[in-house]
Image (cartoon, rainbow, N blue to C red; front, side, top):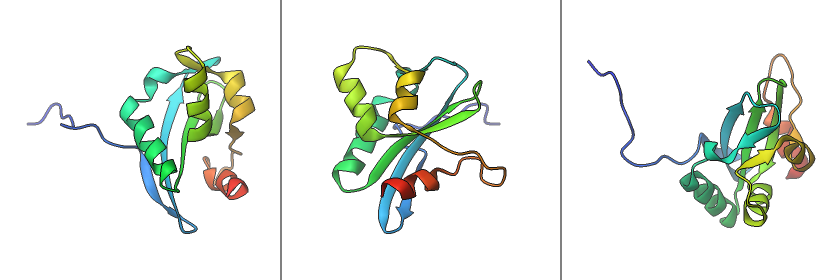
Length: 122
């Protein structure tokens, strides 16, 4: 009987694939906090992986869900790195995400249609 299991090595991100001939890679996160998203929710190896995807011509980003606000944002790895390289904060303020990310429109059939945002930035 297995009661717990762990990976021996850190994994990469939640999703990687190809969209319109481009590599895409993203990590999806959720928070109940209404004012910020804690950077402790993103592991350093995940940021490193997303940065390498970007450096090799891929598109890498975070999907951040604010469950209490019923909002999901698309945040590029470039914006995340810009923030972490210039700030000492341990969290991304909601207002900063709102200004630097893209609100993903909600639709009943496709609740997290990040492809609409991806299409607009490709």
